Image (cartoon, rainbow, N blue to C red):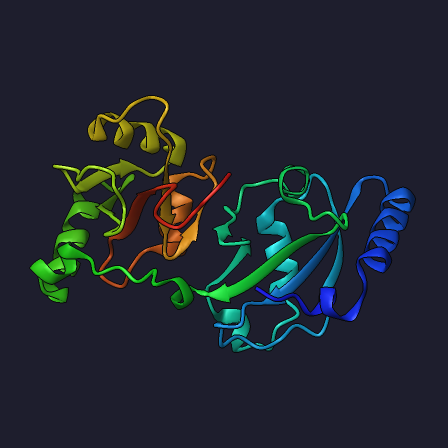
Length: 238
């Protein structure tokens, strides 16, 4: 990707600016944010940011989203460093230490979901009508009012094994981290192998409760749909 900021200023100018800013604001990170050329989202009016080291990607994404026009701000938006997509719980300082440019800036691009072919066809939706799924989810919640119905499916480009069980009834107060380890056991993968969860085209903090996630991201049919994938599927990092 060609960065406009790099074309507008020489390496020496960029390096001098970044080091000056870092000296003045020791706990802040200089970031350049530009739209990916394939994206149909509007351009940001502000491309240069100073962000607290301890801020999460989710917090920074929220501040950037507010600068987009109202309609565009409703889109699912992702941040990338190179071809790697950041997860929302990642710390800005950690990303900077690992991926900063030689000029001492870190360059992040943004795009909507369809740029990297992230669409997923849900097998469960194709196997049952909307009415049947809605009736089933309502029945589950009636019987288990403190739990939510969850469908879990592998991203089609992932090399992870398929789950034999794809439907779960999960307590609302259970953290996503606990459900994550349940899925890991079912997948029977090596302890050293990482995998990730995406909900409604977004990565979600593992400390969130299933109930909160369900309330914010449940489908119209009453199920919560969770996609899992390995780090090689998109080039993700933590």
